[in-house]
Length: 54
Image 1 (spheres, rainbow, N blue to C red):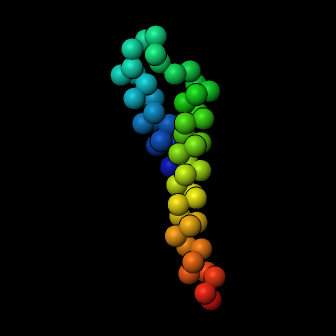
Image 2 (tube, rainbow, N blue to C red; image 1 turned 90 degrees about the horizontal axis):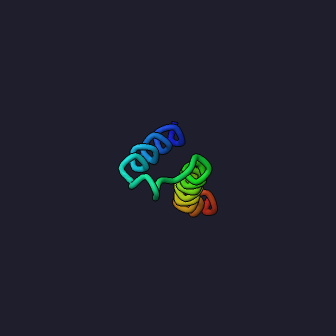
């Protein structure tokens, strides 16, 4: 769900860019995947300390 919404958001941003500066699909996918990795890592780093103490 996150990836779908993030991809929609990136496509909307891409439409606003000038035609010569628009990203191709591969670059959009990479951006979305990088965003997902960052969200996942942040969640993990917030949860990890509470799991260690148990």
